[in-house]
Length: 235
Image 1 (cartoon, rainbow, N blue to C red):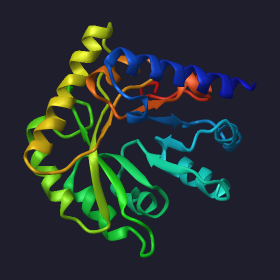
Image 2: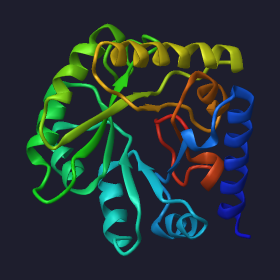
Image 3: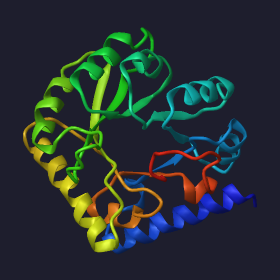
Image 4: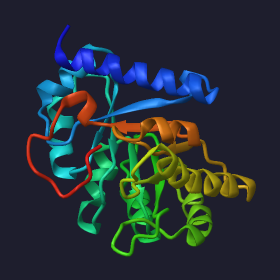
């Protein structure tokens, strides 16, 4: 088997073990392969090993890969920050947008989604650990934003996405993820239906699954070290 195929198998084993330990059905957790900085050949190799959902942090890079791999049945997730001048690209090319944290961004995505495409699936990025320089809406503002986005055409609000600072151990990791889970439950309880918690990466996917994650975003454990340096945390 190829390295990527072996790595995918190992990640699925980790997910399955975490689900067993948490008393959850493994089918409740989707694996999103984070392919940023890796070329189309790596994505094609992962697809041949059974992976269908891919996440891209850098929008232009993602759009180029989407075009090159248009013949494959892939699902593309934009998981990086979305600047105003890039909303049209996201709306036209991606299936999901995970890092929506402003109503203005959501409105632009809604207005720019081309006719004939299904609604863009959207997650609200929440700053669960309170980092002053981190992207994401404050938890206290998430419900109001969720209500606004849920009413926009051409979008379907799916849930919350988090990208907390690295925590030192399982207990600390789980505590951070439980903040997002509590907010997810609060928003559902307020009548805004959510079904997706996009949280957990290579280093903390077990803790995220124990806290209720439904989608883990894994890059390094599948593709290896990043091909180029980046300020973004390793997935």
